[in-house]
Amino acid sequence: MHHRSPSLLIAALVLFCCVAPAQDGAKTSKNDERLQRWLQAQPASDANKDGILTLQEARAWQLARQKQRGQPQPANRPKPTKANVSYGDHERHVLDFYQAKSEKPTPLVIYIHGGGFVAGTKNNMSVTMIRECLKAGISCAAIHYRFVSGPLDVSACMHDGARAVQYLRSKSKDWNLDKSRVASFGGSAGAGISMWLGFHEDLADPDNEDPVLRESTRITAIGTIGGQSTYDPRWINKEIGGRAWEHPSIFKMFNMSGPEDLNNPKFFKLYEEVSAITHLTKDDPPIYMWYKEADSPLPANARPGQGIHHPKFGHMLRREMGKLGIESLYRHAKDGGPNLHLEMFQFFKRHFRMK
Image: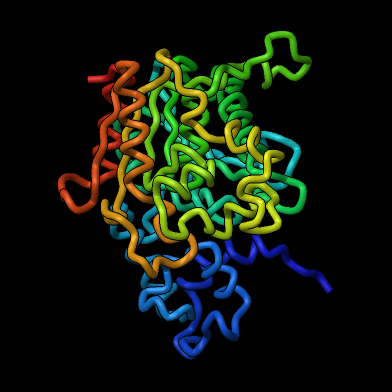
């Protein structure tokens, strides 16, 4: 009998929520493995905070997220020019490419999905972003990357993002891309990978036998939604407070046994390596940041993981970027304003130096 991996079960829940029949409404995280795993990965989806995720709550959470991001229903999604193109040797090393019509090489916007490094899909790329980019002569891509599991820690996800950028640059002639104008964006985990790409030193290896790895990993601009500028649980514990650092993905990201490993020195180097803020230097690209969690202290009864998308991550990054004279545009959902993906698109367009 074939068994699907837990990560794939979580990733499939978006489709599950959209197509499950009405009689499945009695399903909860108490009697359905997919809902149980989704609750672990996305605790905010438990609307009434009773510790039990119902199918109705999961559906409502997904629809609310689509609405907040300005996404039409999936049926309205443009079809990729090239789908599920392999950029590496793992089954999740695949990407979709949307080619803009242009006589000149086009800029490129890359989407990296969220999901706590244990779930998510490239199919969640904002339709608004795809359509606005293509209309403006900007090509798009959306990638998958490996999930953390067993010995595979979060650094693998970061390097998958880097290789995807390199692969896309290696296709610049075939796909009519301008290597000098590449932006990356995503939510949560995708935001973290995008920031890491933006701030990390160039991983290009000019003498590598693999022509893909000779390409640059540097990007022009960054977009984030609920992004964590650091994954260091010591900082999260001190600055965010509550039990934010106890988000289940934190333990999986670093292959920890549990909370007792917080101050184990063997993890310190990895904390720093995968945290974008560690790599920030004055030559790094600008960033557009968007948050929706309350910009206030966590309640005394905060759940494990609550606050993992706290605006403090953005405030800390803005301060450090300000010291270096790098532009950082901060937005919060409570302030209203334009559609976040439309404004992010305009931010990318400006930094691509397009009219």
